Length: 144
Ligand code: 5GP
Ligand code: ZN
Image 1 (cartoon, helix red, strand yellow):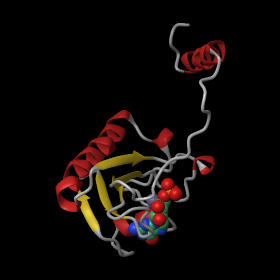
Image 2: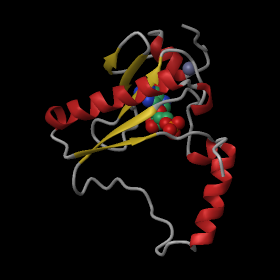
Image 3: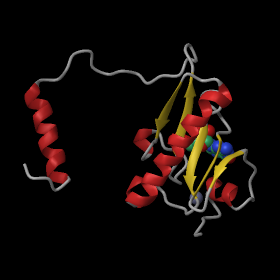
Image 4: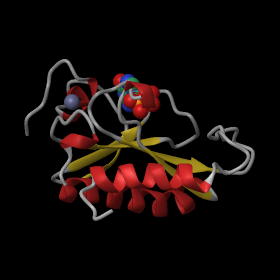
């Protein structure tokens, strides 16, 4: 599998750096985050060094989500959590700090203090939503 020595996740995957492994198969591994946002915070990473979402194909992207789904199912009995968030930061502006694409799997319990800040409290005007949707459809190659 192509790996990059400067990348901490590649170093974990080759065994050069330490991590607490929770899942592995031929394409992916998952290990505990070293700075957990919540108890049991895990990261699903492809074995191949790929920086971000645009580098993933549909098959590997689907496999990452499926590994996240399996972990989420296992976390409830194993950790006693009541819910799970899946989170992926793609790009610096989105908070990505390790440029080896990874899916955060965050076990959640009431009052754990984790959360996303909400933006607007009232919905934007319909024409603004329609304009955004039109741009996205165009970029996706969908008929307008
Ligand atoms: P990002 O900010 O890119 O979405 O997430 C990177 C994650 O990797 C962070 O949650 C950070 O705590 C975790 N991380 C950074 N360095 C290491 C490391 O050496 N080992 C492990 N297990 N996690 C790491
Ligand atoms: Zn890497």
